[in-house]
Image 1 (cartoon, helix red, strand yellow):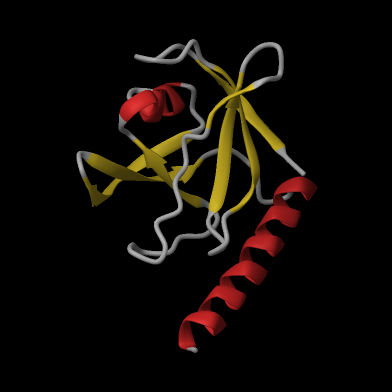
Image 2 (cartoon, rainbow, N blue to C red):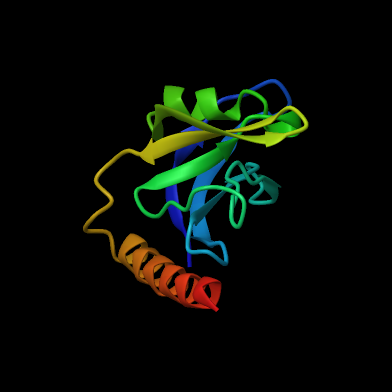
Length: 132
């Protein structure tokens, strides 16, 4: 299950490509990936912060801004796929996750609805497991 969000241009270490919502992490936060023109996965610009950081669910994501993902958050902004909220989370070792909101009319899309349901279900399961 995936949902195409649009194409991004090149960044420091990436030639760009098609961006998709591809699922959810174990805590219910959304996962995205960038695909090459051939359809081969190139990068995963999102990061799961649990158990160390704050949890987020649709329409928000945490974006990697370090290493091979340097410049991808701004490429996502320039493509109109996300809007940075100004929030961030320091993971240490020069790794800063940037908080962003997905843009576009995604609320009525069946694939996004399915991802939102999966996200909510995993989040509830994660909360129950965290309570012990």
